[in-house]
Amino acid sequence: MKRPVKSVVVLTGAGISAESGIRTFRAADGLWEEHAIEDVATPEGFARNPQLVYRFYNERRRALQVPQVKPNPAHLALARFEQRWPGDFLLVTQNIDNLHERAGSRRVIHMHGELLKMRCINTNLVFSTREDFDFDTECRCCRNVGNLRPHVVWFGEIPFQMQEIYQALERCDLFVAIGTSGNVYPASGFYQVARQHHAYTAELNLERTGSRFDEHLIGKASAIVPAFLDRVLATALAGC
Ligand code: OAD
Image 1 (tube, helix red, strand yellow):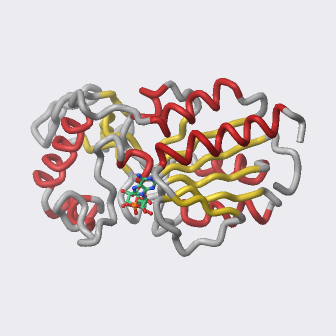
Image 2 (cartoon, helix red, strand yellow):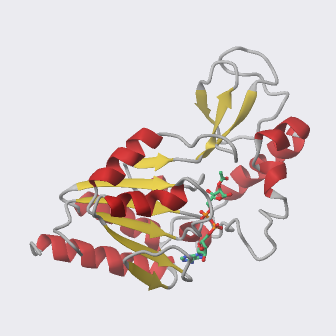
């Protein structure tokens, strides 16, 4: 690494949750759980067929809450790292599941939203939900039906908390991308922003993506994430 590491930003993608039983997006068939992304993850898809989109996210929400789906050693290692790390730490996830929180992570930005939340399109108020909802569900704020949508960022929409993310990227000494294909902007450009500000960049993934990080660690997140974070912590604590 180029300089002592004081500030760390980690970006996670679907690959970190794969071993917890949640399927990634870009399987070989290019479909997300048998659906074309433009049908279930765009504002146009929602306008065209809202019932399909409600049903899709209701199914994902239910699947997230079955007992078999739980944080894996990679989620747990990130939570442990955050607790022990003496400097600044920010975890940015593209995932809409809640496995980081369930593992114990505290400072998490869900840049693509959260499956267990819904939003009123009139007031922009956000509500927690573990239940199904659809066009006929009465909104908790305006008491109308037809106003609730998943609190998920769709293609063509701006991800959440971008200013906070870019500030952290500009100050960090180490940027780590875990389990993300680097296909979706703006997250795909984060490593370049960090690098322009002289951070060391590392990619931890099952396979090498097209992005050029300083270091590439290939393997399953459950194996390589704990080992990598232990190394970062040990190096920092030794004052190197
Ligand atoms: P992808 O499905 O595009 O990529 C998942 C990455 O994880 C791939 O590079 C896999 O090689 C890797 N992977 C799979 N299993 C792994 C494992 N066990 N350990 C380590 N790596 C593993 O998912 P994302 O990059 O997260 O956006 O996709 C980004 C965004 O595109 C999503 O947030 C979503 C999607 O469409 C929206 O919905 C707005």
